Length: 361
Image 1: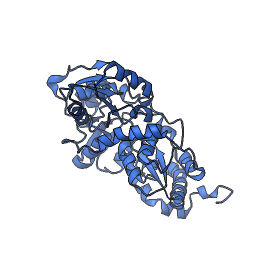
Image 2: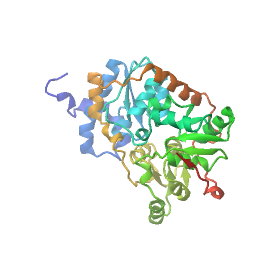
Image 3: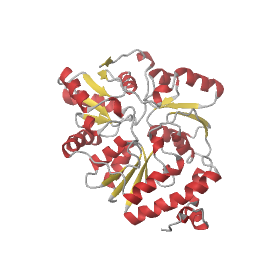
Image 4: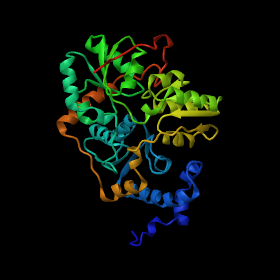
């Protein structure tokens, strides 16, 4: 490796090696930015091949990461499942810390690296394993369904995990398995409220929120619709219920991606972290994206520079206590073993049930 740093020059060889990625991201990345990104992308991809590593890139990564170095892309659970199937010995998690933990839970024999140890999550940090133990004492016999956007110690206290795509299905399955009409769904308050409107199971919820999605309001959506009357508005179920009520569609990041790719709307608004729109746009050249932008500061701690350093120096390894990992794995595996939901990742909000409430802990 050249000592003068010339491996990061934008040479003809680098330009040729990254041409396919540039073709995908050139509507989202400027030519000046690309001259800085491309050498790092080429060097990261070289290091991956040398070390037998793969990179998991979450939907909220910036386009140069998502399309440039991501071997597997998608939501947090999909990435962890791909990590488990991969033969790679080293996994670099381009996402936040709980995602790296989930990858370690499902791939205990692999080295899991995260480029920045401070890449956290407001939702995951809203609850601890100790909190869940107290909840179970307060509601004995009531099953605990935990969103995958949580730390390993929370998953370890959980009966079964869920995603935003299958939360309704998991809640109903948990009620059936435990023979109850009440289910604890933690930690996202808004996800719990949106699930409650689609099931007759009583939902007990925690007051956790995603700092990106909670900032959207119904007024924001109505203003967007007035300004762009032809746009279709797609919202994530971590948004407040009143946002979903005025959206045209509500679903997980995977569902929003599928909606755009399959339906090919002329104009669309994605009510979620704004890098998601950039990444979907690369695969939907005929759709115009209106971008109401709420950035996740934690996701944005991940960069090409620290991905490169993670690979070069094997920095920073994520580990999970064996006992915690074993118990958390059971909760995740119970979810994985369920059949796919009948209507995957779709939130059909029943207008007659707008005022269904939840019990907040």
